[in-house]
Length: 240
Picture 1 (cartoon, rainbow, N blue to C red):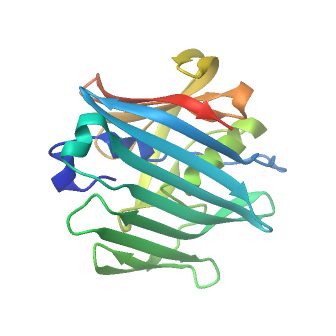
Picture 2: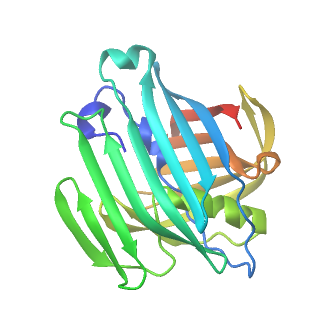
């Protein structure tokens, strides 16, 4: 997420990275193909660029996201917010191993990192210089590993329900609904999509991802709403 000092000038861009939620119930989950996707992000007259990159490892995946201001926003702040996670694939289930967030937009720069120890059943690390040590929650994901779990579940045709997400040093429960047969127009092309809307806590705020079956359910459009109004939007501009 963008730091509060930066959001005063360039608000809500990073809310586009807040995760969806799901539960994978298929017995044999499919493999999510590696990809790299780039989005243009808009909030009012302000602009940014976001990338999502997934690569396969020997035992699972490595996933990286980044968010950078563009245009007039760079007059106010430079840098990026980069998030990474290693994900282990175990019996079809996706289990986060670690998470790292490096924010070079904030002044001073910020760093948050967690280790997800399945054997000890603990999540440990640091958030805003404060130590984190909390119990593991069954089926939990971190704020970006859940993106991969979403694509896996959609490919498997699994139910999407509730899931605990570890975000900002604590667990949060997300709820969502899915709307099939949607259509999204993007600079990269027009797609039939499944729109996944999700909320946590404050029901006045919601996020949605339009995932395209033609691109292995990679999101082609991401939207943040507040008070029923669209506040920010990300549209796909490149996909590999």
